[in-house]
Amino acid sequence: MSDGLAVLGCGKIGEILVGGLLASGWRKPEQILVTSRRPERAAELSERYGVRSTTSNPEAAREAGILVLAVKPTDVDGLLDEIASEVTPDKLVISVAAAISTSFIERRLPDEVPVVRAMPNAPAQVGAGVSGIAGGSSASPDHLAVAKEVLGHVGNVVVVHEALMDAVTAVSGSGPAYFALLAEAMIDAGIMLGLSRGVSTELVVQTMLGTARLLGDAKMHPVELREVVTSPGGTTIMAVRELEQAGVRAALFNAIQAAMERSRELAAGHE
Image (cartoon, rainbow, N blue to C red; front, side, top):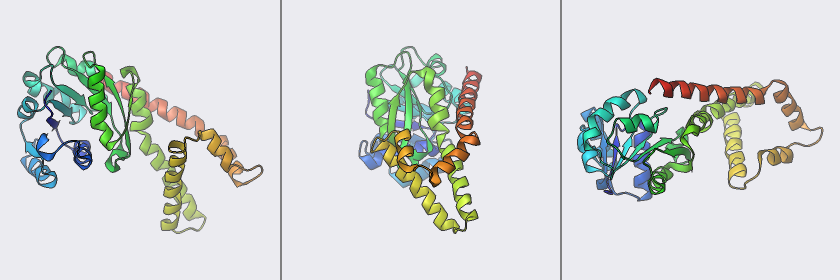
């Protein structure tokens, strides 16, 4: 496998990945090739990151050993038609197109081409994302290790069976929106209680960051953390009671279930 990496259809997530790979030193600019259908976008990426760029997807697929499919899901079929003749089993295809199965990609490429499906999320923009990955029928543990290494430069990576990728999409892919909605509500509540927007925002955002570190870095179980904060007869227990009576827990269960079902619907539409 060539050590060159091509990001085909280098939009937002593709650019985030390129930035992470270069910042970590895992690849040099000359080892990365990006494509865009717009010449001005390709030139912009070259100037910003020092990488090579082209408007030709077949050219990029011919040259690189690792191909990252970063186009919108609706554009994947056309992209695969473009590059199929240039993709061989010694290359690795990593798709970050939401709801596109490995089987969909495999059917449009030559036999035995290894394909890995990935679902990164928005915090990858600050190197704090998490991606779920799943291998297709020809992807070996070594291929998964390479994909994990690539995506590991913008956050954590978990390997799951592909049947669980819709659940990954519902939990972590859509997850930042749930936290953003919670943050918005908490900030507005602080303003209602008399805090300025700036102060309320800082209190909420730092509380979320600190809580995430306790759950992640300190490995505290959510129940343990909640019990540490919740004193008998205190303020927190009254707030938690209100949340439980309002059905917040059930609402989150239902929301994530709905997101997973929608992911499955979208995936079925591409089969």
